[in-house]
Image (tube, rainbow, N blue to C red; front, side, top):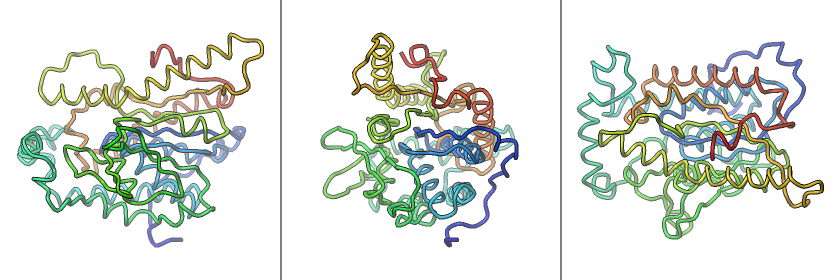
Amino acid sequence: MNKHMKTGIGMQPDPSHSKREPRMINLALQGGGAHGAFTWGVLDRLLDEPNLSFEGIVATSAGAMNAAVMAYGLAEGGRSGAQTALANFWRRVSHAAASGPLQPSLLDRLTGSKALEFSPAFMMFDMVTRLMSPYQFNPFNFNPLRQVLEQSIDLDAIRMARCPVKLNICATNVRTGKVKVFGNDELSVDAVMASACLPFLFQAVEIDGEAYWDGGYMGNPAIFPLIYGCDTPDVLIVHINPIERPELPRTAGEILNRINEISFNSSLLREMRAVAFVTQLIDGQASPPQNLKRIFVHGISDDDTMKNLSVSSKLNADWGALVDLRDHGRLCADNWLLANYQDIGKQSTVDIRERYL
């Protein structure tokens, strides 16, 4: 086994899962900083299913890191290898954060809060990023996640034919404003870092003469690579950013966070409208055109948990906070599998119009 893959915390599959019929799905993974640990938990649980396979993955930001690590783990060690690789990656993220200034305050730890609002370092960091660009406050472009990612994956394993999934990593081209999708053959550490490059925090990532920012601005994530590049019609979206919030944001942080959520969800909502339109055309014709493809949409989310997390918690990589999100993700995935596994390949388990339109 590759040197990157050591001990992990993936749980052993339940023997009863083997009774389920084989199913194949595509995965669409959203970004959201440290909240990506929720997606880790979802993936960890899905990987427990011996008869559930994955044809394609499209992902953005933290979702892109989860996707790249999972693809590497599958290529090197199968399902258990992917679980181990994901666990090791998030452990490294936590270790890297532990040596940085953005730590929960004593009050945060005593109250069990996942926020950093009472952290003096976060207050200073928040003020600096509002007044200065990353080219000013971080002229050497230091990003600890780059080293973590380099330690966690072997890109040759993803590029080679033995990688069992079609990987699609989304970034935003700064010059054109268009989405750029990096596939298996194009994948690099720079591509994954570009997908997670928030322009207020990091300098744009340059690849082949083009500059890129976080893919969430144009696709969080984009669905079209799965529609056109994969045969299986099922797309399982792992949501991190709440689509709806009942309460009006009032603080500066809450307003900025909601603006980001709306903008990052906008491209997904547009694609879901297109899927709903095509589905209506197919259902309304006895002999629909053969160039129309029916897509079955599924979703795993925990909006109640995510709505209660502040924007600062996206920067909190404390191990306890990450594990808590992982456990929420595993539970949500377990509930989804129990309720919807038999519908994979047959019908959507999300009411597209109610959820997205």
